[in-house]
Amino acid sequence: MASSRIKHNKQLLLYIFLCRVLMISWGLDQGSFTITGPPRGWNSYDAFSWIITEDEFLANAQIMADKLKSSGYEYVVVDFLWYRRVAPEASFTSPGFDLIDEWGRPVPDPARWPSTAGGKGFAPIATKVHAMGLKFGIHVMRGISTAAVSNNTPILGANGGPEGGPWTAQDIALTSRPCSWMPECFVSVNTSSKGGKAFINSLYQQYASWGVDFGVLATPSMGKLVDNLVDMYRATGDDWDTWNDLESHFDVARDFAAAGLIGVPRLQGSQSWPNLDMLPLGRLTNPGSKQGPHRSTRLTPDEQKTQITLWAMARSPLMYGGDLRDIDQATLSLITNTVILDINSKSFGNAEIVQGSSIEAVPVLSLISCEQATDTKWVIRNAESAGANDYLCWSVPEVINRAGELAHCLDWTVSSKPSISLNKKRRATEVGEHFSQTGFLHLWSASGGSMCLDSLHDPQRVAPNFDKITTKLFSSCSNQGSQIWKLTSEGQLESTSNSGVCVAIDAQVNTARIWAARGIEGQYYVAFFNLGLEASNMSTSLDKLIRSQNLAHGRGLSASTAAPSCTGKDVWSNQTMVGIPNGILSAIVPSHGCKLYSLTCVSN
Image 1 (cartoon, helix red, strand yellow):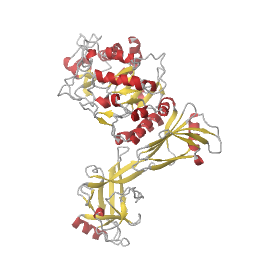
Image 2: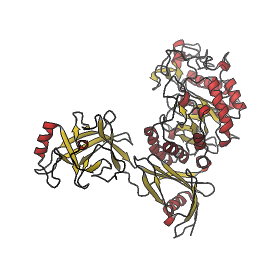
Image 3: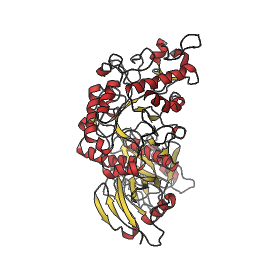
């Protein structure tokens, strides 16, 4: 079996050691094994960082076998640095603490993994995992350890080196190409050399002898190159339990779906899946920490539903990241929801759809601490003609695409006196002179009904559009101090009555996202996602949605001029839906939340 494992993975070797990130699975008999959907399992990183022990790992594995195996969760994975000693001065970036064998290959730290002592490696751990009916996986750093290079260890099975003797670590190491996120610990391998190829083969021999079923290598940049060679690969950077991390996955998931990279057939007959990273739910630690699980996820219940729904609709592998020893019933129900699992494993035609929703920037004005508002820059620009109003202008880096800058000049009158007549335009020079003397100003918008910018947040206010800005921060103009602002020398707009509070622009793009997919029994799955800061009324035409799905995938309802009749279920509220008025599916979706529907439709 070992030789079979190695044979199936030789095609991966050139990719693995060029310091790129993949996620792959090996050790499976591709002639008899068929993947029916993306892998599911548990990974140690989000809960334990790099310090997990054998007892902690096996306890999580047993709980997965008891509670999650029946829902298709089968992989338990030890994440990175299982070969590093947990010494007081050791960290996830520090060299000098990694254990290697006589051939320069990493081996488990027996202080944390007692069963591996005596050169047994992970074989005893894999045996225990297999006895639970699960599969065992490890994280593998690309390249070769600097510990091996420093010790110039020989390479197993590689004679006839450059100096006439065996090939060594220094012969194959590309020290000018360190691995970017751990440069002092790993460097690239020259895979064109006989010694480099032998080193890679020796690693696979090692993994096969241990009984490893699943391997994780870590980054996102090679999807098009490896999609037909591996079972799964990372499509994003690390995902942690923040809204910014979660939000950044929407564009990635959309683009991979649009490129046809979901479930691509592999050369070996199975399928390949872009991986959006682990699910940071339940009890967690912090990135790179030397502390185990000590806090709960920071994602709200709505955000947690959004994450598992996006992962399902995008058919990402579902790898739970929290400590299973403390999983609560709400989280367990979330990751074992039968509709979510059916979408994840059995759906097709999965894609983000756009039906009249804007892809323009939708700036939202909000109050946050001045320390957090440094990205938003404000400036007063003089009026272009005598008697006209001055302009208040803002700029902010584009937060969704992480590139470029959004900027706009607002037609908000800059007034230095709260008693200003809103019908009367003041000369720009008069406003500028007063501002330079006092440093204070009022901001009002005639187009918004003669309302002034107010630092007293009132959630009951409506959120009209003030010159392309959405906000609830406008109220009737008065002499209140909450309507007085100061433009600081750093370009921040700071409240004079609420110290340390500034106005910031959240330049969101296309905050309403809609995904659709088909089920193998004829279902139509529809997911509404609201990425915005306020609840949103979202809708889609079922007729257009169904016709587009049928046109793209060649099966479904027959052509009809009448709107289809659909029944189904609101998945997260578990409410049955009987009839959808006028064929328009609509819902009020909470901020950062989602709605998920499973529908059965017939032609009228």
